[in-house]
Image (cartoon, rainbow, N blue to C red):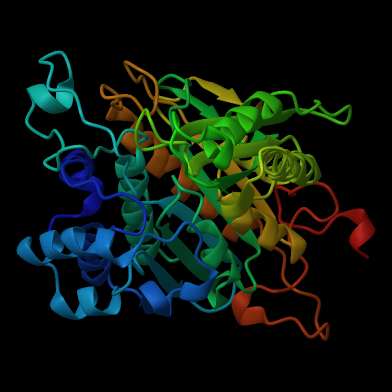
Amino acid sequence: MTEPIRDRLVSLRRSLHRHPEPAWREFSTTARLVEEIRAIGVDELAVGPDAYDPADRMAVTDDDELEPWLERARERGADPALLERMTGGNTGAVAVLKRGEGPSIGLRVDIDGLFIEESTSPDHDPADEGFRSEIEGTMHACGHDAHMTWGLAVLEAIAESDFSGRFVVFFQPAEETGGGGCPMAKSEFADGLDYLLAVHVGLDHPTGEVVAGIEKPLAMCHVDLTIEGTSAHAGKAPNEGDNAMHAMGTTIENAYGIPRHSDGMTRVNIGKAEAGTASNVIAERAHMAAEARGETTELMEYTKDRLERTVKNAARMHGCRAEFDVVSESPRADSDPELQSLVSEVAGEVRGIDHVIPAADFGASEDATFLMDRVQRDGGLATYMIVGTDHPTSHHTPTFDVDERSLEHGVEVLVGTIEELERRHPVPHVGDGADVAHGEGRPIGESGAIGEDGALGEDDG
């Protein structure tokens, strides 16, 4: 690891690709990240429960499901002290550079994999070139291996530069389940951020294209629906049963009948349903995994409330009881135009990038919005950018892959944006009580634009 990360982007990404770990099981992944971060040298490094309050996590995995992944990390030689710190699935890390006066800038990258069996086809480059997932049934099928590579490379570049300010990299676990964004956003490391950058690879944007900031990400919630009824002999005494499966069917039918809302887009889906034990038994229990989404947080709440009412009324209709448990959720947060403009400017000067889109509708959900919302509510600016890559098939498929040319593109856009933010960040007003060391004065862009010379706008007095 003495070779600079910038010179081994491809090999680092491929190494991470070989060892994907799903949400809250990223033990080996976190240990590898920590190893790289320590080699870079940072002023503060927090792992697991030192990076966030474990009580703020969502979609937490049961302990018995964690143990095989913990044991695998031990077998791969992960630092035992780190694994002890991650007990209970407290994975992920935060790295901090403190470089005196200047802006406080955050970068969020996600680190978890998916439960997808990776293709063995010779047409699939990871299989053909020897870096296919080594963990059966698990895959980096959404580009988080590239995201981690960016996070480490950018951290190294800023550490070696003359950057002045505070730089925080959030290596966030459990994005795919919507469970890790909330604790990171509530942590002390999100305090006082003037700017927050989040980034994703691909998303149907080709190599050489950059989206400076997404708009209209859908607020979402994942929920578990459980219906409890009464079992009975289906032939001898069906009237003595309370059919949880029948109540489940009523729930599914009526859930898709929840009225759309006039204020904007809403979505509902029941993606998994299980009930019953045998053909001659009235089912006493049913379980469904569902989600609700909305164009705004309020619209998501509307859909979620209607879904809860639907399952409880359906259960009552069939003499059953229903439980409605929110597993995870995330708000809507849009990218700030001022940062979109700056990213567009920076990306337009990066070699290999020939098309810059200032803004694009996202149309999906992302728990990076927790951090974006936190920074924006505190008076800062945030953007979620997309670095295009030619991927042969869609995200979350067995043959997903990235064009490794996009690794360098992402590093250059992110580093360039951070450098420009530092250069243009205004000096806090003297005597306004601002914490100069953390850049907690009035953020750039509050007047509506980031000035080329870093000057405050006319309305700033």
